Image 1 (cartoon, rainbow, N blue to C red):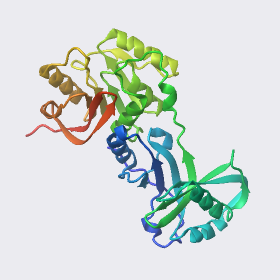
Image 2: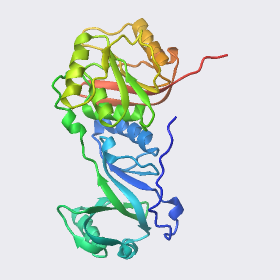
Image 3: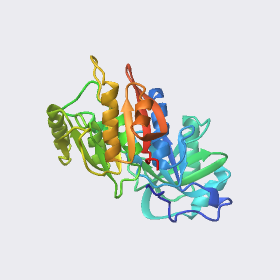
Image 4: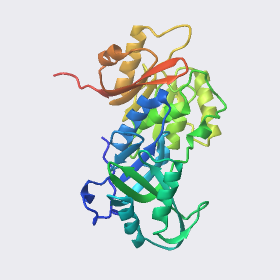
Amino acid sequence: MYSKRRFAGGRNDSVEGADHLPAYVYTYACHEDETELCRLELATLLGAEPSEGIVLSQMAVDPSRSPFVKKRIAVTHAAESLEALAGQVEGLRLQGETFKVVFAAGDGVDYEGARAIERTVGLHIRGKADMRCPDRLFGIVSSGGRWLFGECARNEAVWLHHAKKPQNYSTALSTRMARAIANIAVPEPAGIKAVDPCCGIGTVLVEALSMGIDMAGFDINPLAVRGARTNLQHFGLPDIVAIGDVKELSGRYDAAIVDMPYNLCSKLSQDDQLSMLEGVRRLAPRAVIVSTEPIDDAVRRAGFRITDRCEAHKGRFTRQVLLCLRTEPQG
């Protein structure tokens, strides 16, 4: 369903082993409570496993999509040593533009070392350096004995503004987790229709819509729907929510996200859990299911296959995050 987005051009093919270079290098960071969620989101979104703060990927993704990505470097030069890399960038022509070089990631490099690396490469670029507001930002990464260089884009962290919603639940997903889950469900939004059939106050909807994901929202609780509409309006997003019971909803979507309802006083019965999950299965062949308790058996009985999973923590809550695909009926 989801195609890989590959970098076209910009590669320095004169470098030895250029065919094996990543098109992009992403740097990332996460809290220890989010390590598993970060791994699942980046692997799904970027098509490669994260390792020690970087992801080497062939996929072109806006770094602001992920709450964990810090920078994206489009690799145009690579060398076996810093000195060789500095020699390569002498061929850059900036045509009057100002520039800045940042060391984005590498093993065992302290603050002074990073600044020295930036100076070593920056002095070989033909142009005027501007440390505050450059026209172009370049990044350097040291990985696997290679030095990689290219245009650098930063994450704008837009989801931080979404934490200040008019309507909030104390047990609602954080904006970071909601954004990561939306990316796991819909890594490539083009042509995809998604649904959140238990949307609550719209935390997932806000993140999904802000990333250009076409998503509809429903909730059985009229007060929750009213709160979701208030939050969407606050951020200038369209009203795409309606009252509806996941057990009775109809329609066809490519992906679904469901944060299984819970509260401090009662839990869903097993029959209710199964009925809700069967409703999700009717809506979409791909689903991200979030639960505060183990739910594997109900997920399988509802007709889903769990393809990946993680745990995420928020205070005293531990949430199970399951990436599921609809199983086809036998016969």
